[in-house]
Image (cartoon, rainbow, N blue to C red):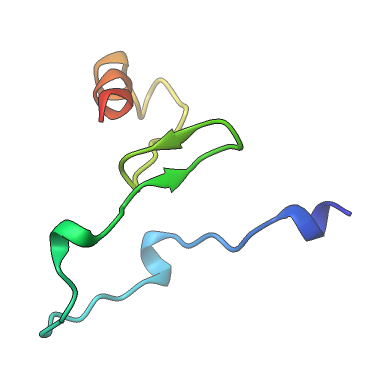
Length: 65
């Protein structure tokens, strides 16, 4: 049952971006991420919930975006 709820997630090592021409207009791209059913963040970046990785200032800055 749990397997049906899990979606694919990618990490930095899973993605390779090759620079080239694109017809996509940057201002029309939606980089937001649905973090939970009730929480949507406006940037596609999450930081680890570890005090040695994410200090308070970074957590606040990410939340404000």
